[in-house]
Amino acid sequence: MVQVKKKAVRQAILDSAYELFSDRGYHRTTLQEIAEFAGVGVSSLYSYFPSKLHLLYAVFEPWYKGEFGELEKRVLKLKSPRDRLRAVLLGLWRDIPNANIGFANSHMEALASADPGVRKPVPLLEWTEKQLAKLLSGALPSNGAKIDTRIDHDALATLFIMAYDGFVINRRLNDLRDIERLSDAMRFGAIGHLLKDAEPPQLFAAVRAAAAA
Picture 1: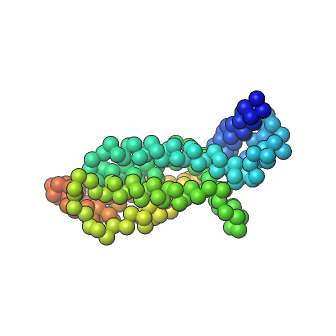
Picture 2: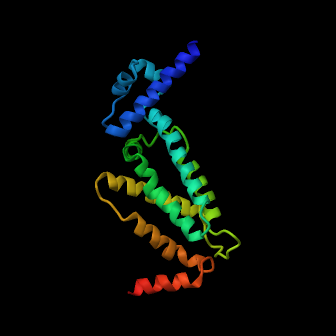
Picture 3: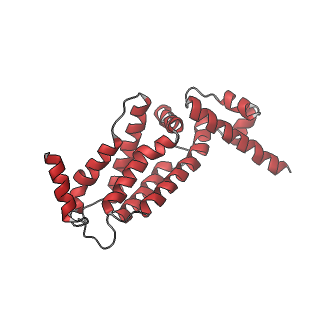
């Protein structure tokens, strides 16, 4: 009975933190407010989570992994390497932050203000790099298409995640970018030339014609 109560209290704290971090952001939300919203004392909150950063990660990690899982499902339904790449970029740079931009902002705020001498509560960055590299290796290419072997999926994963951080941070300041345009530039330009044998030649002719118009 006591164990059930503990689980209920912990979940109440998590639910409270999710709502407040999403609505107010990381810095504007205090542990006192989270505790009051959950109907517990601050001392009870600390018995479950040793710091505000630990609490943020406790709610952010499952949300983020859930959104990433939905992205994986969307990508795997596509057949064309270019379509898969576009889905990966739009999903990472646009769809995941848009699912809860306040929450994504809270994560960036927390990282920017974290003590550099303290390790992150969970290795979420490493998990994302690994999952994204795996997704990219499956997306580029498929169905036996020829591809340049110089593609470093691990390096691309890190690069795309760095871009994600930048987009989220700048969006918080209302400095927006055309994510679709950038995604298309990657799939037809910076990376697209490595996929020259993975798409019908007429597609490239159409793209070149559009660029010259």
